[in-house]
Image (cartoon, rainbow, N blue to C red; front, side):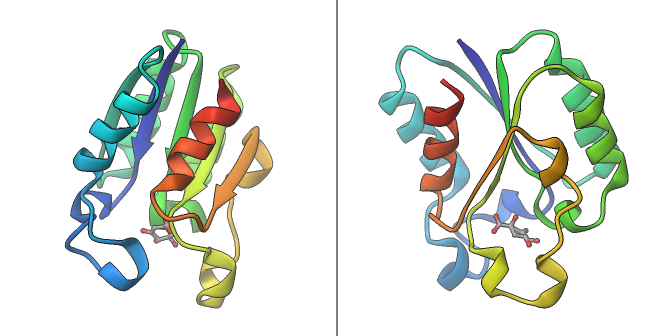
Length: 137
Ligand code: DQA
């Protein structure tokens, strides 16, 4: 199976950013670990800080993979365009968050993408990605 992990804005700073919330590991380090844990899966990773690039990537990879794991980061709470891109494709998308957004600021309690995703995993740190992958598989 082929699965894409798509990360949104500021997730390029993982390991350096608000470590108490997001941990000390960079995504690249975690991604290497994930590839070792799921050797049978073809895993790909894309990150962008730009909303339109995330929309284009979702469109582009949908026809060539079996599932998408998406942490849209702050765009989760605002992006109609990303929600529409998910609705437009057949490929299942699992929404993930590193932190438990429901225990944080009010503005993080709304997700525009949850209703159009296959499922949602949040609050387990970077392990949220592995749990999302296990559930997709
Ligand atoms: C996040 C939660 C978002 O509210 C925040 O804007 C992020 C990361 C998470 O993974 O916990 O950048 O998506």
